[in-house]
Length: 256
View (cartoon, rainbow, N blue to C red):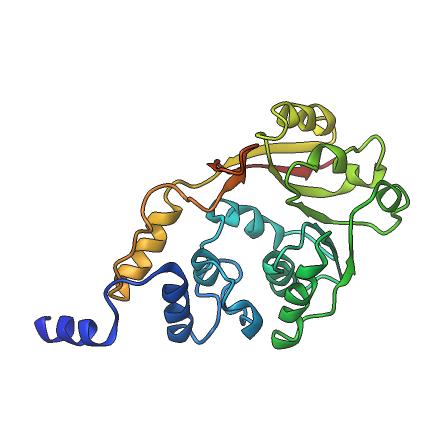
């Protein structure tokens, strides 16, 4: 055991910044997501400098893993993601569920190369990509959507209106609730969807960082990745970072 410990100390660095730790982990895992429902997904070179450690390990938003596990028991042929960001979820869901169609909306065009970069390296079916998810697009949407994922920094109140966008009544939905922008949003969505969907409120798993720490410890790395996840924050009116907690609403169409 003492010999093994000496070997570990000689191979693995003791303490690193998050970016350096992510690079180190990717080197040891073959540049693939390490665990979780998206395990084995190859990480494009363009994303390596921008990837969160939790994403590389497959532990990002760990509280949602149960939702993604439930989806494998459903016939998910068409997925819409509103808020594509760096493409982590479009790629992960595409690789896990192999839908016929993946529709990705992202307002910030700077993210588009990042979203697309996952496709070739993982041999995924190309997405259909859009800019803003406008009222006109959602009103005139005719394709069935089996699963809708939304992370849009406060726009969820506008985007989720089943009385206006009728197709949402037959769509399973997972949405991050940004209650710090609108403290009535959770109640609004519950009222709108409770007759057509089974609803589940999901809170950030406060042990997510502890799980990250345990993996790093197994690699002989000491890091400051303990406690509640700290990757959630907003800017207040004075441009100060305000730490927030993650709250999600999973809405599954009721069986009739």
